[in-house]
Length: 281
Picture 1 (tube, rainbow, N blue to C red):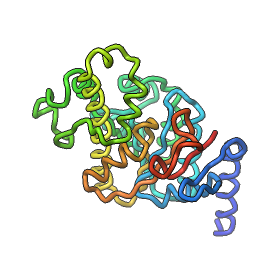
Picture 2 (tube, one colour):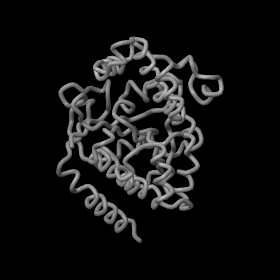
Picture 3 (tube, helix red, strand yellow):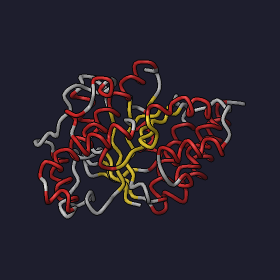
Picture 4 (cartoon, rainbow, N blue to C red):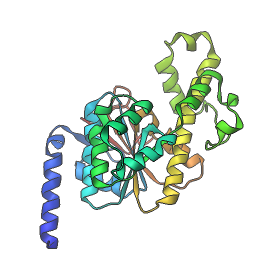
């Protein structure tokens, strides 16, 4: 296949896979307020060591955006890996078997549903990764640990449970995310009745962020040549969540943050403090 024909074919594929999305999507580069195209967004994502694409888990069009960007990155021949909040780190072997073609869809769905919900929301992304042999990385902290911290605080973890977690995780009250968490959860009765419970909840969120950041760093150390595309909830992807933890852990990992517009993060109140790109769908 000639170089010109290959370039034309890739351009056609990009046009086909993204034509519908581009017709309804506005991408704003927050550094200068400029509107850019999805291929331009994919180019910026591909140039980064780590790209975080936020989502509201229940919104199917957020997952469609993630898949469109993955397709564009793959078409550009950038070596990729897909990091998943939805999978706990102790399920990594199942992801490896899935990508290798050694695990069927019913079995993968069972594993997924032990970790998360709504397989159908993520199915196309999983199939794409398997068909393209793109590694998938389980990033999240085991749920039992998160639940224990949320109930009793980080200090309640045993030395064995703390293995694989950054030391001294706490609720950082200087973190802008804490103000959002207080605003969002202030109506929950157990938070109102006991202020310490909110601290535990905040510590649990920090454990998720710091644990996922540590797993990102570990994968990057093993596969420095791949762009790791991290799919996670908006409030883990935002710059003062996982990206902040990456810096606190001294990783030196450069990241790009892409967020969909939500009621809490939108064109009227978002800056480069929250994200690099904001996508209105």
